[in-house]
Amino acid sequence: MDDPAGTRPLTGSPRPLVPGSTEPLEPDRAATAGGEPIAIPADLDATIVLVRHGESALIVERRFQGQLESPLSATGHRQAALVAQRLARPHDRPALPVPAGPPLAIVHSPLSRAAQTAAAILAATGAPDAFDGPIPMRPDARFLEIAQGEWEGLPATEIAATDGARLAAWRRTPTLAWAPGGERLADVRARVAPGLVDLLLELAAAGRPGSIDAPQVAGYRDLVPDQPWTILVGHDGVFKVLLLTLFDLPLERFWMWSSDLCGITVIEVRAGRPVVRAMNLTEHLADLLDEETQAAAEARARSGAM
Image 1: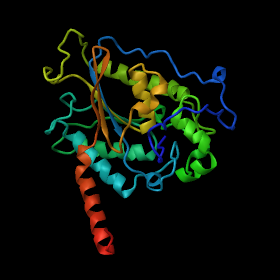
Image 2 (image 1 turned 120 degrees about the vertical axis):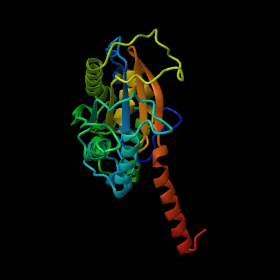
Image 3 (image 1 turned 90 degrees about the vertical axis):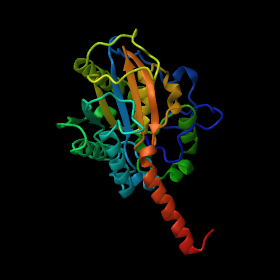
Image 4 (image 1 turned 30 degrees about the vertical axis):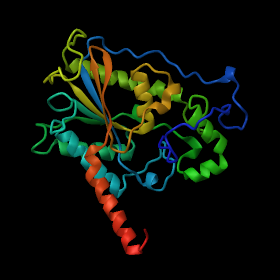
């Protein structure tokens, strides 16, 4: 997805547009936003760590990415290295709420910005002070970013100028409007849901059955050494759909989640019930942000600007 002009819906709700035209979308022609709940193994105890990719070249240029290839920028590589270091030593203080032991796998979107971020994580987890032994890494096309059709590669300002009504409708009512030639959210969910189920089944096969009768209040739970966990490296838009699918929420709530570049989200499944343990953590990027702030201050000083 990667909407460079914002991630919040605008206030108000105009009548949404039929994709590919300027005609309003009538209620009886609205796209179906729902879907059957996914089958989470009832006794699954496991953790999924979501990591958004680092900054890409198209993000720097404030262009819509969608499924276009766009490698990491220099800053993106730095972000990837920092999130990789954090995940290689997750129990350094302040500890991430993940189980003891190495992740079961590193799964990633095949797009280069996600693949490069995943590769940085893999390299860091293989460091001498990290986990023992190699961690499997694999691409999964079901976690590709949302296709943005004719908007891909265009600057946000150009889309706003030439297709502003549709763009506004996408931000207000994302289940009823989308980029011309792009994906509907219902179609994105249709490919994400099986990928998510496969991840959960893989975790279930690698772990031991849990019980909802175990302590459920944070602070009273010890790390479970053999509870499996997986890292999934992907995109803001597809993570929005994944989280709505996992928590059985309607796609109309699309804008309720947000993932910063190389932000970390931790979802624990307790006896089949998903729980948000951490959302969009970015503290590991603080040194980079401090460097950027200092560089900007020095540039202003050289220019004489206030």
